[in-house]
Image 1 (cartoon, rainbow, N blue to C red):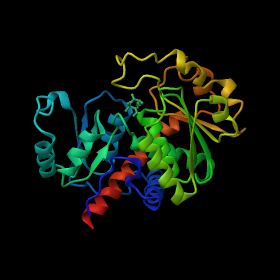
Image 2: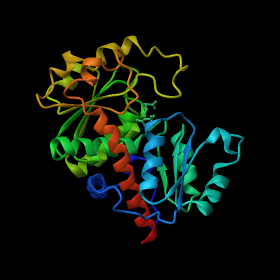
Image 3: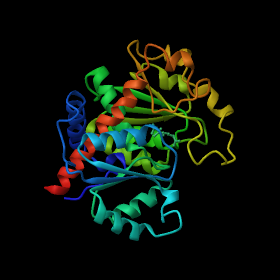
Image 4: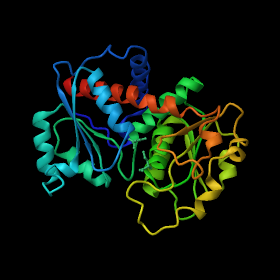
Length: 309
Ligand code: CP
Ligand code: NVA
């Protein structure tokens, strides 16, 4: 059956575990699955800039035996206004799947509605679910499991990372806290969806404006840029309200003694995180970046298998 991955709760808790277990296998044996041997093609499209997502999908699709058609949409007819409906129908004739980084979540939903191949969200304004699969893989590697762990995110609670950490984190049974300044709190609909998912898994969601409460006793500390792509000119002060939420030694000292630090990258040292923390002993950000490759390969294998069964 055709499946898409547009937001973190598109995978059930059991399915998310399957994908993460496969990601761990593929990390050990990178060329053990070749569903795209031929090679078959996957479209990887960008409306926004990218380093990790672009390289990890391109490299990962090659390792699966396939060919990635990596394109900035500005150089396609999408940029000139060809409809998403027509574009989706056309891609479905050429490719086995479509991976897209875009702005509104509604855009990727429209593409998926009209696509007969799996569509994967490579970041929208609202979600970044592939990143969270890599984050969960990294947490499993360091902590053995995810259920029952306390994960706190500091910064813009209304951005794609905050939303996906909430929804993906509770899917993995975690207790997720979003510590963000007033005016930058998560979308209530995403909080509600996360709380509904947490009911199934034993996880929980807490939203606070007190970074110290968020840090105290946490097992996993996460932050992200204060200015996401597309927000550069939104007229909001994205400095002063965020300063108390900077992930620095003071906040880290409140966390569990074995706490790990995640950041999806790119990082801005001296803004959302200090150099001491991101380059320090608790930081696992390079493994986290590498895991984009393994987690996305696992996701693609899983989605292709669903479509072919
Ligand atoms: N973390 C992440 O998605 O990085 P890029 O923007 O470089 O793809
Ligand atoms: N929140 C950031 C994530 C970058 C990977 C952004 O959307 O720019």
